[in-house]
Amino acid sequence: MAPTPPPVVANPEENPTMPPEPTPAPLPAGRQIATFANGCFWCTEAVLEQLPGVLDVVSGYMGGEVTNPTYQQICTGETGHAECVRVTFDPTKVTFETLLEWFFRSHDPTTLNRQGADVGTQYRSAIFFHDRGQHEQALAAIAKYQPRFAKPIVTELSAASTFWPAEDYHQDYFRKHPNQGYCRAVIAPKLQKLGLEDAR
Image (tube, rainbow, N blue to C red; front, side, top):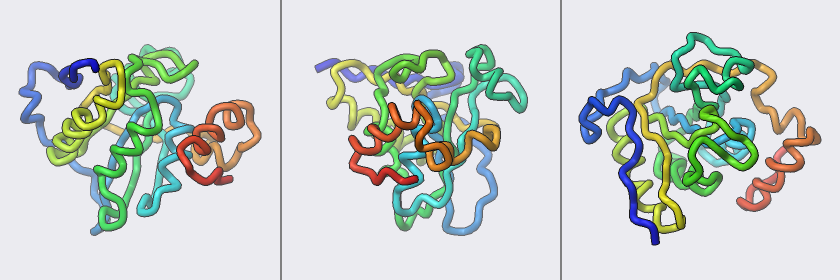
């Protein structure tokens, strides 16, 4: 079994065990935010929006240098952003730990800047933590799930930065376009493999 490598942490000049506290977005009481990148956001959205306790899933971009990037810019791989989803959830019904479990179940965290046929830094595996608690839980999850993989987990851990919602046509993509080629070839089989309803 491969040894567990240290996780990738943004801003290496900072102490990785004590990351700066990101400024949380204002939320109604009883709501929390999680942000995950694990390949094409159409897939991630289709998986997470089916989980009880998940209230909203928005596809978007995070982790780059360009203000308000477009999908066309993201596709070049030159902005530094990752395709990601912002998940609003009720922590009394689904925990961040459970979301992490689904994160690691629903993609291959050992392939650097790639998920299947989707290749580029925009498809990297990343957890954008919103507070120290999420950071600590993400570190624990990497250690927990590493034994399930033959290769080292390369998931990036970064403090959440500005989230840029993707264009409207990306939102709820699988629900709106279940017969589109990518949806039929990639998303529907993934949902079936994960034991989730093929929600349309």
